[in-house]
Image 1 (cartoon, rainbow, N blue to C red):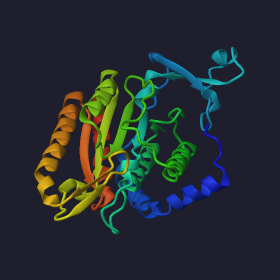
Image 2: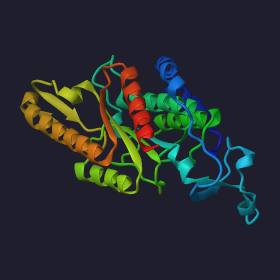
Image 3: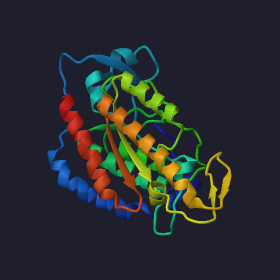
Image 4: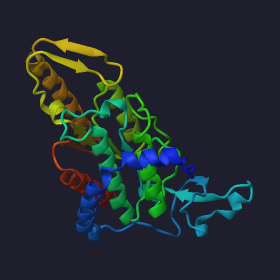
Amino acid sequence: MSPTPAPDTRRSAEEAAAAFPPLLVAADRVASTVAQGVHGRRRVGQGETFWQYRQFAFGDSPRDIDWRRSARSDRLFVRQTEWEAAQSVWLWPDLTASMRYSSGRNVPEKQTRAAILALALASLLNRGGERIALLDKPDSPATGRAALDRIAMTVMHDMAQEPETYEVPPVPALPRYGTVVLISDFMVEEETLLAFLREMAARGVRGHLLQVLDPSEAHLPFRGRTRFRGLETEGELLVGRAESLHAGYMARLESLQTALGTFAQRAGWSYGIHTTDATPEPALLSLFMAMTEARHAGA
């Protein structure tokens, strides 16, 4: 269970979330059209393979407590099975420094869009009875309103803090059949990114990738004398003719996207691209339907 945020932290998180309600309302409208076909996949009885014990957390049902294991400690433990892992989804909205970019006043920052998509997806999954958690946080996957609220508060808190600068998130020991959703610009060193993805796929983890780009990153429309400022450790670059960079930049972007698409196809994952000048609803629907299809294929 996460500690209760201090008043100043809560206020900062609420301010950071000020732009969320309109898009979350739109996401709820999308959820209403697909939720009727979504059903939780809980099973009980014999034949479940033990995965791990975890500590009892807020939102868990007391009937799930393993009293024999808990008797050996001063804490309560819940027994988890691989079938439960099959219903668990770990979300990672990239909130690192490079995501705090927008090319125009009417275009949201990439991190804002990534956060909204992640929270809207969490809401949809929660409606279907899926267990949800954040990939880079210690909380175990859980379902219910308390789990959704905890994720929302954590994301909004992180958005109000100084951003991290790591290339890929630290990965916990995920179980087989678990699902990860990574929402990022994926603009990191290609081999580092692919090694990170291959490690998860090798464990039997299912995954979905959504690349979020600012329209200027998708097309590099700059011309003439242009100063490029890095948001992390890249420094600055002053270019006399920005259009001279266009061909090389687009080739590298195409290489990255081809590599991600190839990886996803071979691993049985999904991969999509979304630009922040577009509305979020189609991207959310496509991502959610890809997850639904993958779930049915693996059932």
